[in-house]
Image (cartoon, rainbow, N blue to C red; front, side, top):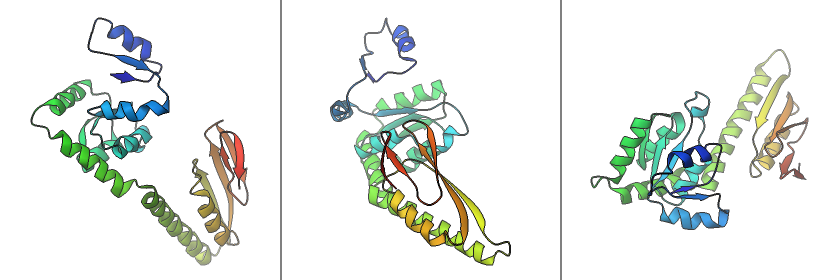
Length: 220
């Protein structure tokens, strides 16, 4: 069962035209996702083999864990480490087709406890990706970062240091970052570069982080 679309959809449909056990559902509205997730025995996550991509964690992984689903991966780096640490599925290296096939066969075998994998998936989500815990961890890291900036500028004989922040889109984080920036702005020259993912625009602010959502300015 394949839900969604993408640049490879037509090629995959052509490859499977003689198979009667492959079903394509096309793009579905978000409202349909809970029903489709519920029907799934496991969720698949793949990425190309790339050293930069291996540092990322696709958002879908957290979504899969939030609904307590086992994960089968063909992906390197951070995601592979999390799947193994959580004991919530099987994972092979990116683009390793043979390993992916082997992992799928292992998953459907009678020796695999799929219920335990599902429980592990949800437990890992609650312990590591719960919104409050996640934001507290980020804010704690930011606090330590800014404390380090304050310490270094106080010790420096060269005066102010310039600090550059490259930020992603996060409405929950913005007010807290502004608070910490205010604390160190007298000791540091800094520019804030904000990436608006909706229109790939870089916005620069000398004092505050601007937050955009759906191309509409909603706050500073």
